[in-house]
Image (cartoon, rainbow over all chains, first blue to last red; front, side):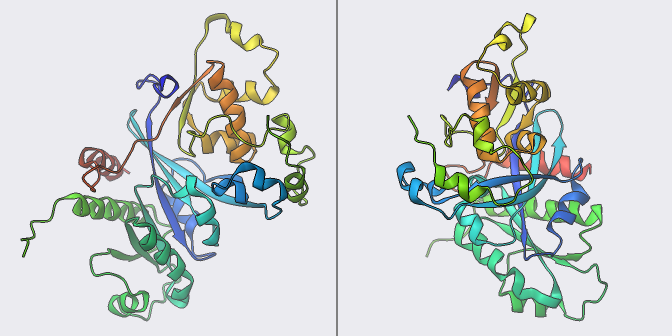
Length: 197
Length: 133
């Protein structure tokens, strides 16, 4: 369609990466540590109508809710921009918000060793939607008494899912997480030389 | 013709600090006329000598703010954040401007390949850019 053919020299192409995890686990902090701008906040109204039900059905629908998300951006040259979206803390909203998850490159799930269970839903969500992800164990309290093996077992992670330990306030850790995700995506995209039996 | 969703308006008027009902800005429209705008669709204002098209009576102050903002390309989410309006309201206003030829929209890159993998060239570009962070 003609209106989507903007001058490529003027408009960069965009991709997005989702930052997920339980409430207060450091999603916006991670966005801010790698974003070139202070995290921005935007809101969306979510209703039944927004999940694809016929519009007229929405007239009687009263379960409208406002959901906020924080996001940042990383400009990769003049041609490409990566947007980082911190997902709403309550995963049930993600299912209502197709625009948020559709077309994402992948995700980063942040977990806190003191309450790993708060990140279970994020992991389940990415697995169920087939969105590749890496796991960040946020150690900013400096007190991590559990081994990576124990954490992996507690999160029931597939062996190939990368898991990194660090401090999401640090830009270098944020960068390492994003690079780990991209490497993971590349590994998944290379045809595996597995012999068919 | 879309019937205004008054029940929705009651529901969204939940003590937010705005004194204006957001869908007033869209003249009661609650659904965008186009459904291809995403959070990361990038918008660019069409540079028009003399700004003749901007004299249209259909343009509201928010439309003009968007045209000013998108002289530098910006994603839908960024425009919504700048306007302090919900994404769905912003999309309606953006759709008006695209329909009038005042704004160009660039769809997000498609990341999935038909083969099931992702575009290695795109991933390489992202990785190289991240390494410079």
